[in-house]
Length: 319
Image 1 (tube, rainbow, N blue to C red):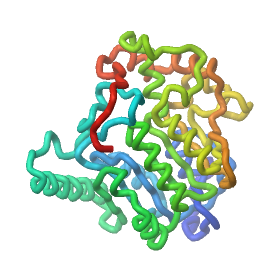
Image 2 (image 1 turned 90 degrees about the vertical axis):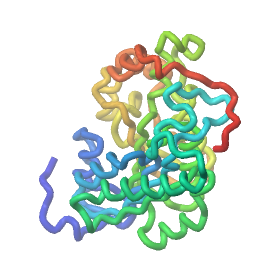
Image 3 (image 1 turned 180 degrees about the vertical axis):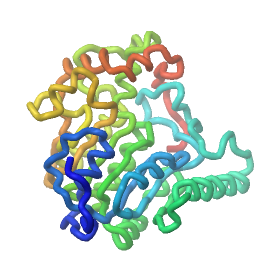
Image 4 (image 1 turned 45 degrees about the horizontal axis):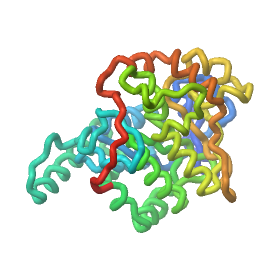
């Protein structure tokens, strides 16, 4: 990996893209040699902020000053879409930034405002010049065409998108909004935090009804299903940038896929925007997926955790 060269910040890409050094830092792998040496001053979108730790760490690793946009209800997860599986740990209202929260709506709004202020202060601590915008609210209400237009007008399309909102419904709403309004372009990189979580959870003894062999990754639901549906609906061709998303192409990642030495989070690059059906960029058949689930250390951890027992009961809460 070549060292950072002085003045590289002044050599911008013509479209959204990540510098080779920057992508390598995110992925913690050294195979992103085709990304170039330039740096891009752009937009970072994170869906699922919680306490802001990922955005804070992300900013500290970069040599440019991106504009951060973070989206979270700050009052916990919504209900999952009807019939979609979720771990018990992801029940509606869990992972709240405001704790159990007061009952009165006026107090709830105040608690959310305090949480937003606290998270903003954490992300910008030591970096007062860092540009951070936090957008509270359920995605079904907060992700509007007007907000998308504002982001494009003030900071431009995204160079990096982090999907850390856990549920299928949240990932689908976020991705639909991004691609409907041009917030992702060719070169944008998308990371999925819980791509493997549901599939891993099916190896938990409590989840025998969900266990399947040689199944495609999207058949488990969650983020992979949202990714597939959005690719097909919006005509997005993705390419595996790094991480466990390439096991068949013969590329530099493929020989590591089945050993579990490629980490847990896949990173996809938007390679093309055209007509449907698009392509997910995930190159691993069901057999390879099953082998990965059996060998990945994180998956072994999920097998013994009761909080990752799965449920797909009917959901009636607002999403």
